[in-house]
Length: 108
Image 1 (cartoon, rainbow, N blue to C red):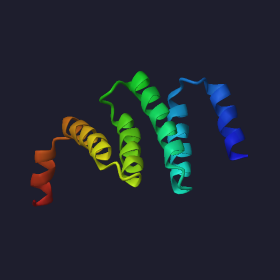
Image 2: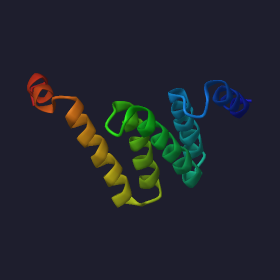
Image 3: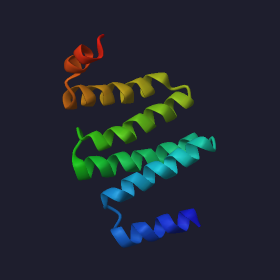
C-alpha cells in the first residue's frame, strides 16, 4: 500500500517534482533499515540527481541525499566514499551558515 501511494503521488506530481525527491529518500531509508544497502543507494542517488536538477548542487535540501548516501556507503564499509559525501555536506553547511558566528555564540 505504501509503495502504491508513492507511485500514485509520482504520477500526480510528475517524476521531476521536488516532493518526489523526498519520497525517494524515504524509500532509500526504508531499504537501508531492511539491510538492502545497494537498493537504498540507488534511491538516494535518484533523489540526489533530482534535488540537484531542481535546486542546484549547493542547496541545503540536496544535503539530505548526500548525508543519506554517506551513511549507506559507511554501512557497506566504504568509508572513503562516505567521507566524500560528508565533506561535501560540510562544505555546503559552511557556505550556508556562518560557522564562526555559531561557535562564538555556543561558547566554544
